[in-house]
Amino acid sequence: MSSKPEQEKVFKAPEFHVKNWIDANGNKTEAIKLSDFKGKFKIVYCFQHWCPGCHSKGLPDLKKMVEALHENKNIIFLAIQTVFEGHDANTYQKMVETQKQYSLKIPFGHDAGDDGKSYSNMMKNYKTGGTPWFIFIDKHDNVVYSEFHLNPDAAIQFLKELK
Image (cartoon, rainbow, N blue to C red; front, side):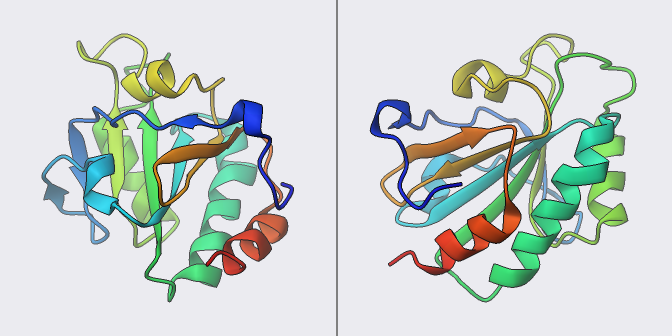
């Protein structure tokens, strides 16, 4: 992750359209919207429960960033299970288990598409390429990073330097 996003890759973040959420304590909560975090920098981690790379790399990297930046109230972390295959394995309950397994005190969403068995809305709207996937949305709601690969140490440094 470089300290400056490539301008041609920056685009306006669409609304999330994720219906099922749990809060930082694992309790079912109202749908979270992008507009809930105006003026904040948002980190959105997309995963599937059955994704080996999500468990070996993505979730540990997310946890490292959350722990390093948890005191910064201008940075919001969200995790969304963006189901695009294996709908029977990547369930709402598996999303709840993933939050507990990694002791991540951040909101988690479950997005299995509008009908519960198609591509997730996040994947369609944010044009993600699978899982694990990190999306960085700046305080003006511009997507400034959307990639499979992430160097968590570089990301932490970048986020610490934000004004």
